[in-house]
Length: 308
Image (tube, rainbow, N blue to C red):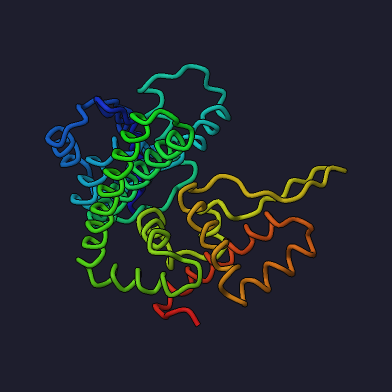
């Protein structure tokens, strides 16, 4: 029987720190493609398992190299690994100690391997994030325009906003082209916008930021989106369950979709009205509709059928 060997990796922009539990050795390499490829070549695909924290773009080269070599890996929320480190009563913090802690974390929890990174999905994520950034900048400019009174300032703001409109429109066209490049992605996009309330922008956000749709249970997918209510009870304390954590961009897209679904679809409107009357909270009812939409989308992605 092959025993899994957990290799912890602490990631920074400049370098990667590895700890191999089998040999007990540390190694630091540059966070560059050539150095990573050379290190990964020495790993054993059927035995070594790399554990790291989710660090945005800084782990991208490592993930692609590991997937190409067939070495399994998993990424984890830094908040979770931080709490694990505190539970071990460790006070000191260095890159080497973090790498060792991640190796121990892997041994303790034995996480499942993540799927290999998808180039198209990463491209969609990058484009979607950039579009969101441009939209936020345009919103700030519109706020300034509403408060402006000088003609020169007003004219300049209007010109800048028009330029942002053009850039956002062009970016959305590029995103649409990326979606159409793959038959499966184009099909999933069409299925998503068949659901009441889900706009083209909402479908893009879900494709880019929630690729697990259709692959997880309703409870698991709700937790990923931050729409799973968690109990808050202890002794005589009995507070209302609350949502927490999850992916904020996905949750925001589903919240906006829920508002539209309540207005345009009798099925969701009835569900909302009944829950709002029973709970006395309109916001709680909207969040419940958002979760219901997510569960419906998850089933649609799983079964590859349009909304009915």
